[in-house]
Image (tube, rainbow, N blue to C red):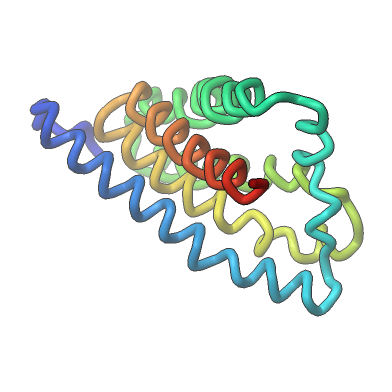
Length: 166
């Protein structure tokens, strides 16, 4: 994958918007799977560690942690190294290894149980798919774009969760 030579901001913003929409749609397409897993008692959605971590925090603090701090840290850790590797094979291996690690690091959001471990590929599927989109925009446009996409994605989901609590 190569850097996109088109540096026109409106072009990049258009691609960014499309990737953001695809990311959100992908998340909504995969989410019924979680409802099904909970319905058949394979997972307990109420045992989500993020809910416990955010307990007692105000919405602004939750938003800042989720939509600013987490994207910056995760993008620096999982996407920043991508352009260091120019060899085609090494790049591909690193791209997919980091994408899968990014997804699986999010299994820590769940209370670990046998079912969570066994179902982990399904439980982190949204993050793995998001990792592909973030890796794409990082390589094509740069690290700030992947941080922005990650922040926008998390920001939208967190904002929707706030609305759900009204």
